[in-house]
Length: 212
Image (cartoon, rainbow, N blue to C red; front, side, top):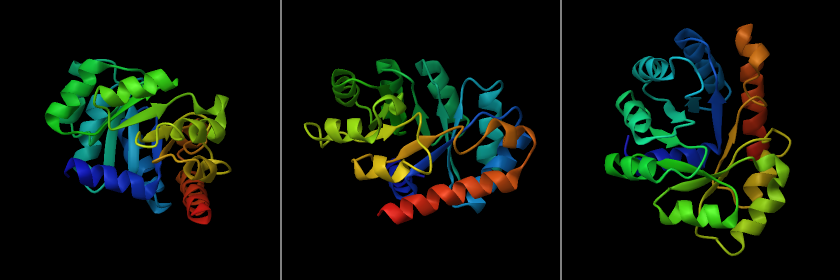
């Protein structure tokens, strides 16, 4: 899938699910549960043991999903993720070498930033969007304030996004959002309660639709 198509799909779904699975089977089942709820854009973080291996298997078995790799700190990890099938890369902070690598491979890069200066620096370095983290500290009002003087910069708030406030983040000007434990609870993942994860996904999708 080409870069523009990946970005278009993320913009359309509005929610990227963060998964911290213990094994590839858990990742696959969780991804399917999310899809049953209407979400197919999924970020697997490098804090997950064996993340690259799991990403490779998931990308091969579920080619219609958008699997991305998050918590990427260097270009080597980004390249490994891309070769394993990552359709987008996410960093927790400004990492110019990762941005350069992603642009070389024409893969979307969401770069971690928080202050206006960090957000501008990420954008000018070539990031496709600034991952505003942790978003819960100032909420949707902060996104709206940033978009005022910087309407051209795409923002993806992460941290503290849930079904109750996701529409407010989007109304404030966010391109999309990313949700972790509020969408994929560790307990549900551990107990393989896929119905609970599907229900959470449906709640997010409904909230996004209601807020349009």
